[in-house]
Image (tube, rainbow, N blue to C red; front, side, top):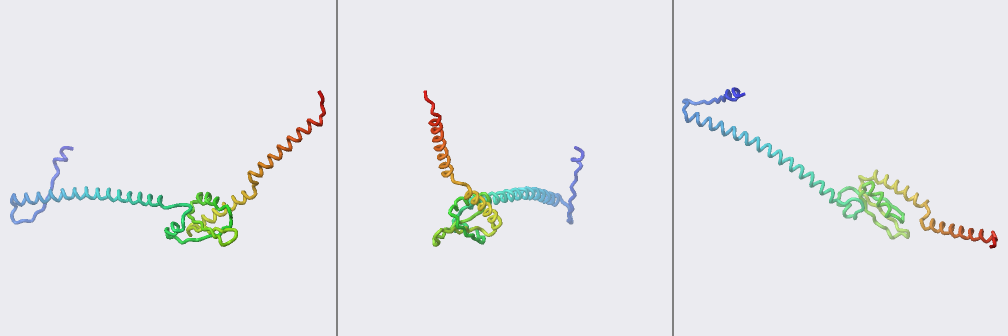
Length: 185
C-alpha cells in the first residue's frame, strides 16, 4: 500500500520556449488551484443538493400545513367557493338534517347547507364540490337508509310509556289474584 502511494505521478504538459523554475512554479500553482477549486465545487454541489432536499422537505411540510388549515366538513359558502372547484347542489326536505353531518364526516365531504324558508316545510340546499359527486351519492344513500331505520323505530318515550302501562296492568292483576283467593286467617 505504501509503495502505491509513493509511486503516484502527475504529468503536466506545458508549451513554452524555455522551461525555467518560475514557469514550473506557475504551472504547479495553477494545478493546485484547479484541484482545490474542483474539491470546493464538489463540496458546493453536495451542499446545494442538501439544501435542495431541505427546501423540498420544507415545501412539502408547508403544503401539509395548508391542507390542515383548510376547513373540512360543514363550511360556509364563502369557504367552499374559495377552493375553486365547481359547486353542485341537492335539495332535501328532511327536518332532521343535522344527522347528515355525521355521515358527511365519515365520507370526508366538504359541504355547505342553505335553508329555504320560502316554502312551508323548510327545504335545505346542500352545496358540495363537483368532484365529490360519487362520494356524495354514496353518503346520501347511507343517510337515507339511516333515516328510514329511524322512522321505523318507535321513539324511546313511546317504549317507556308502554313499559309503564305493562307494569301498572301487572300490579292490578297481582292485587286481583290476592283478592280472589279469599283466604281468611
